[in-house]
Amino acid sequence: MWVYEKKLQYPVKIKNPNPALAKIIMSQYGGPDGELGASLRYLSQRFSMPYPELKAILTDIGTEELGHLEMVGAIIYQLTRNLTPEEIKAAGMDAYFVDHTTGVYPASAAGVPFTAAYIQSKGDVLTDLHEDLAAEQKAMKALVSAKSSNIC
Image (cartoon, rainbow, N blue to C red; front, side, top):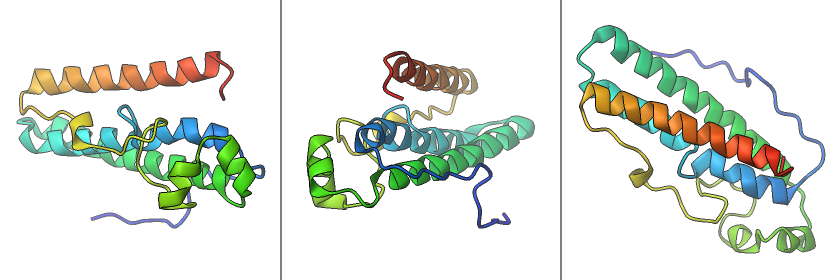
C-alpha cells in the first residue's frame, strides 16, 4: 500500500493569521477547481482506464493531489487559528466559523460546500483526459487571477 511520513514535503509555517486570504484559499481546498475535486477525479477515472500505464499515472496524480490538499488545509488552518471574533467578522467568515470554527471544511470562497458535481468521470479515455486538462487550466487560471488582483 503506502508509507506515510508524518511531515509535509513542503512545510507550512504561517505566523500571522489572515482570514481574508484564508477565505480565498478555501476554494483551492474544496471549491469547484480545488484539490479535493482534482484528487477524486483522477482516482475515479483510473478504474475505467484500459491502459495499465495510464491507470498507474492517474493513481499517482490522484495521490499527489491529496498531498496538495494536505498542504492547502495546513495553510487555511494556520491563517485562521487564534483569530478574534472581530477579525472573523471583518473578513466575512463569521457564518463559516459558526459551523466549523477552525476546522478546515471543503467549501468554495463563497461558502458553497464541496459537491461531487465538481468532478467528471465518463469512462471514455479521451473525454476524461480532456476533462483533466480543462480542470488543471481552470485551477491555474484561478490562481493567476487571484495573484494579479493582489489578493495573495
